[in-house]
Amino acid sequence: MVTASIQLSPREQQLRRLLLDVAKSIDKAGHAPEPIVLRWAGGWVRDKLLNVESHDIDVAINAMTGVPFAEHMCDYCEEPEAVAKHSIGPDDIGSLHNVARNPDKSKHLETAMVKIFGLDLDFVNLRKETYTEDSRNPQMEFGTAQEDALRRDATVNALFYNLHTDQVEDLTGGLQDMAAKIMRTPLEPFQTFMDDPLRVLRLVRFASRLQFTIDPVTRQFMADPRVLEALRVKISRERVGTELEKMLKGAHPRESLQLIDELGLYYAVFSDPIREATVFPDISKWRVAYMCLDTLIQETTPGSIGHLLIHKDDGSYYSWNLAAVSPWMIVDDPPNPKRKANAPPPVAVAAREGFRAPNKLTDIITASYRNRSEILSLKKSVCSREAFINERDRFGMAIRRWDAQVGSWRLQVLNAMLVEATDVLQQWSLEDVKEQEEFLAGWKAFLNHLAELDVLEAPSLKRLLDGRKLAKELGIKPGIWTGKALEICVAWQLRHPEAKDPAGAIDEVRQRREELGIPLH
Image (cartoon, rainbow, N blue to C red):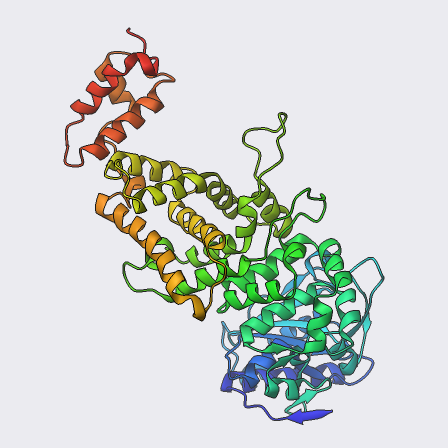
């Protein structure tokens, strides 16, 4: 075993002293079959060695499960002597929460959670795992520190900090791999991934997050067809979605998608594992989409494409999801007269069933699919200077339609751009800067034209009159005609942006009365 020193913060030292006294108290009471040894495990140790602050600590216990240890700890912290010795304030110890075992959510043991001195602690016993061939849910039993380390997904996540010796314990070569910035599995990689194929995605996430490379042998087995099939059929799609969300909300989403691409994981993540698809998308140029998006996000100056299209805190997350599913955007369902008009397109099914995309994301993806052709057509019209491109109502009403369902017209334009990039560009690299700049210039011209027409905020245009007022002016009751008539009024407003009186809009509705099916009385 290799060891190393670590520097604790004052509150981490305070927590260490408290936990050691809790362990002594348990030993003294004879509540455990052997002396308690406490270790902080996994991610906190890794981040501490990387000088990354972490508030989440997993506490691994050698001879007791997490819940009784945490219960004893909470009792101990109420004793007056303990309160005085460890300077425990009234808000320093949070409520104890027990998280029940739930294998489908990767909770294989009951876990005790409590917040102490501002740090979030999870208490669980050291364990070893035994897997059956058809399940990623292991049989669990008490294990040694070595067995607990070996069951983990990567050596850099298998380090322990021993509270009693004040040393980092390395039982799998994690310190050496940390120094070399390499991700590898503690055990033989094929068996590691077949036991739990989700580890493939976890390694992708950590490699991109930490900016580490993946060991070549480990990488080879991550792309093994048997592992990919196991990832596709053995892992709950909620867990796949959780890993993907962490990747795309992290600091390096492009690297995550690039690893998925290079390792050949695409169909194992972005497809419905239950139903056999009759068609799959071509992903040979998927790289162009995510590299293009990365370029747009890096350019944040006011007026840039990324600045205009990627808004709000979650805009980046939705953008990366659109880049992820962009190969599916040109896949259509085979003709089927029995298919309902509002049935989700293949891209939405791939997102919903492949990684359990939440409803809003699925709606954005669906709208992006359905409006892509119109967006692309209008963009090409602007670039070719068609005669109608100064018709403000044509563009404003189109934007309002795109935005109507989920308020995401800018993301839909971004999607159309990413999909077109994969169609017209062979690659996205430093060698093709001129071609890429010409491509982006076309979309920038389109957005500039929308800005010149002053329709970027068309969805928030306030109507000069509502359905009730319009019906009153026409001298009839509102009816099924009202919605279409109001759209005519909004289009009139877009053509007359300075107007404050809706009389002209009402006159146009009157003139189109027969077309709208408005009754005379």
